[in-house]
Image (cartoon, rainbow, N blue to C red):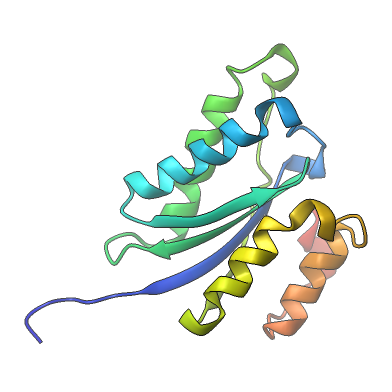
Length: 150
C-alpha cells in the first residue's frame, strides 16, 4: 500500500489530582475547548470532550504519527499549564498522573460521543470511581485498586 491510512478512535479518561473538584462551570467550556485544541494540534481530531468538576472524557481520532502516551502527556501538560493562569484557586492545579484509554469501534463512536455529552446527568447516579471501575471491567483491563486512585 502506497499510503498509511488510519482511523483509530480512543476514549480517554483522566482526573484532577486527588479527584479534587477544580473544574468549575466558569472555566469548564474553555478548558474543554483548550483540550480539544491541543489534541487537534497533534493531528488527533477531538470528536467529543466533556466531564465533571473532577475528571474529563475525550473521544479522539488518534494521529498515526503520535503515540497515545505522548498525546495524553501533551494534552494534560498543556491544559494544566493553561488552567493555572485562569484564577488564583487554580494556580496549583494538576491532573492525576495516570489515565485510562479504550479503543472505540466506528460503529460505537456515536454512542460514546453521546455518553461523553451526558456526563453531568450520568454522574448524578454514579461516582467517577464507580464509572472507571465499570469501564476497566467492561474492557477486561486488569488493575490493582490500591494504585488506581493514587
